[in-house]
Length: 97
Image (tube, rainbow, N blue to C red; front, side, top):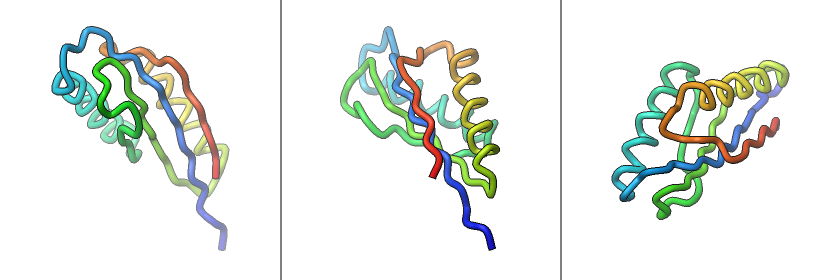
């Protein structure tokens, strides 16, 4: 039996123009909802929880193939960069476990 492969994408985001944590959370909740629906991934805000214009999202996928995990996470990163107009990606990291 093969072991499951877990892929982790960490996105550091800039969220310009937010005036409160409520604004930031509204933007992030919409983004997280779209990512979960589009890619069937797990997603959560993991850092900068109390900062208005910054966030870190952790996004995970599970597969039996490391290449598939890497491909999915690359697609997710590209999707965020091209479709999430309320945020900009400052940095990204992909790790495969």
